[in-house]
Amino acid sequence: MVSSSKVAITGGAGFVGSHLCEALAEHGHDVTILDNLSSGTMDNLQEALKLPSVKLVVGDCKNPTDIRDAVSKADVVYHFAANPELRLELADPVTCFRENLYATHILLEAIKQADVNTIVFASTSTVYGDAKIIPTPENYSPLEPISIYGASKLASEALITSYCHTYKKKAVILRLANIVGPRSKHGVINDFITKLRRNPKQLEILGDGHQTKSYLHIDDCINAILKACETAKETVEIFNVGSNDQIEVACIAEIVAEEMKLKDAEFNFTGGVDGGRGWVGDVKNMLLDTTKLKSRGWKPRYSSEESVRLATRSILSTQR
Image (cartoon, rainbow, N blue to C red; front, side, top):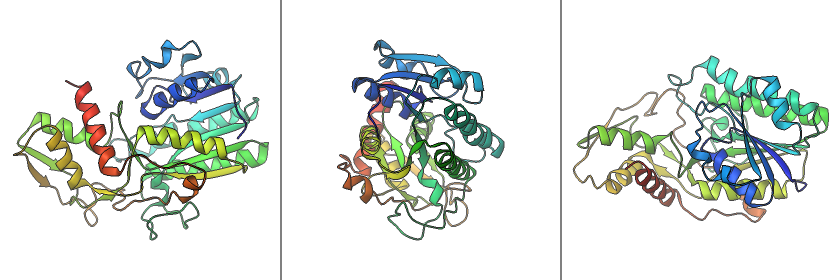
C-alpha cells in the first residue's frame, strides 16, 4: 500500500481505534478521527489528542455529511466504527444492520467521490462461523457466519470488495480474533471482573467452559495492522489477525480470579446452548491461520494466555 500522510479513522475513540490513532500519528501521519462517542470515549483519546497531528470530529458514520467532512482530505480510511456486541440480546439485527452494514455503505459512497485510495476494514473471525478447518485460512469456504454480527461484517466485506473493483480503490480487510488489552470495555475478561467484584465468592460462566478461542494483545494487533497495510499489494487483500494458540474460557476465569487474588471463587457453568456455546451465535472453537501475515514479516509477541493475563492486569489497574 502506498505510504500515506493523511488518514481518517472511523471509530477512532474506541478500543482498537484509539491505539491505532496513536500508532499512526507516531509514524508521521495526520490523523482525523470520526466517532459519535456511543461506545468510544474521550478517555481513550487522552494521549492521542495531545499530538498536534490528531484531530477529533464528533460525528456519525450514518450521516453522509459527517463522513464526507472526515474523509475529504484523507488518502487512507481505516473503518473501525461498529457496534462491538456479538450477543443478540445486546445487539439486535436492526442495530447490526444500521451500525455495521449501513454505515459501511454510507462511508463507501463518500470514499467513491473523494481522493481516498485505500480503505482498511476491521472485520472479524466470526465471518467463518463454525469452521471445519482449524487453524482457519483466509481462503476457507463456505463462509457461514452463525451470528448476526458476523453476517453484518461479512456483508460489509462484500460491499467493500465490490466498490473497490468498481471504483478503482484498494482495500485491506482484517479478520480479527479476540483483541484484548488496555481500554477494552467489552468481552469475557471485563464480564468476569464485573461479576467477581459484585460477588467474589461465585462466578457465573456462560456455556460449558470449553469454548476455545484465540486472544491477541492489542500491541500485537496494532503491529499486525501496520504490517498488513505496509505489505498489501492486491486490489483487495484479506488478512487473518490472531495469536498462535487458543485458550479455554474456564482457563480465562482462573486467570482473572488469580489476578484478583480470589482463591475461593466458585465457578458455576450455565451449560450454555447448542452444545455448550455461551449464547446463540457463539463460535465455540476459533483459531486463525496467520501464515499469510507472518510471511510478510509479522509475528505475535504474546500467547493467548499471556495476552489474557496482561489485559486482566491492565483493566484491574485502571479500575481501582
